[in-house]
Amino acid sequence: MDGGNNDKIVGYFIEEAKEHLETIEKGILDLSSVIEDEESVNELFRAAHSIKGGAAMLGFTSIQTTAHRLEDAFKVIKDQTIEPDQTLESLFLKAYDILQDLLERLQGPFGLKEEEGEGILQAAEPHFTELQNYLLQLVDGDIPKAPKVTSESVRASSPSLIAVPKDDVVAEVRQLLQRMLVIFKQDSTPDNRQQLEGICDKLIQLAPDENGWKNLLKSAQKAVANPKHSYRLLAPVVIKEIKLAGDCLEVGKGSEIAPSQGLEQLAQSKMPQILLTLDPETAADTLSQVFNREQISRLVNLLQTTT
Image (cartoon, rainbow, N blue to C red):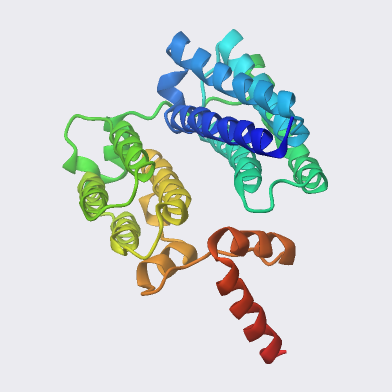
């Protein structure tokens, strides 16, 4: 097989894998509802299975193994009856992030090097072990059940939530997050940026007297309004922060909500922002995906003159 055909096949795999990733992300963000629907759980299982199969065919071992671990986790909720909680959702989101990171590296200009994938996989192994063990604990009933959170109990512990008289606040947050996620998958336009700002306004109205909640969403609103920020940069930060803040509202801990430093930087900046890790190799990979060759050359020259 020549290089051109191989690149096309890899491209097809990446595009298909992105669609499966979207299915997985949506399912995890709404896990408490998805787990009640057999077909929805099957979709999660099939999405991970499809990524695993495609990666195996092309020899991307780290992606294959990561997708397989997710598939195993989804098989537990497919075959067993469990009640998901915030810890499980967080563990699933972290697993999703690992798989997404591998696929983004594969799509980058330098591809996914085998040793790089193996390093990520080794670092992720303790997390997948934790996820699997936690699932088994839920199956065995070893996790103490927290009191069931209803809209009434949340409002009792946080009076400001009376702004939503009958609807479950958590369900409203998840529904709006799903709408936001759909928009982030589209090309950026002034119109859909306004839609994102409108969603932030609607989220604020769910708990208008919770200052932390309001401040976080105002920061998110400013960040998405800045046309210099790409959706690829905004989506993971904004979606996760709102999701975690919604979890705090769910248990009546609105006072603990605050925007992260990363979100505040996106809200306040007038120039495009890139969030970089302190690891030089990972930072270089991120920059290579965002900058063109001329920009990288200028950056190298600037760094050399400052050292």
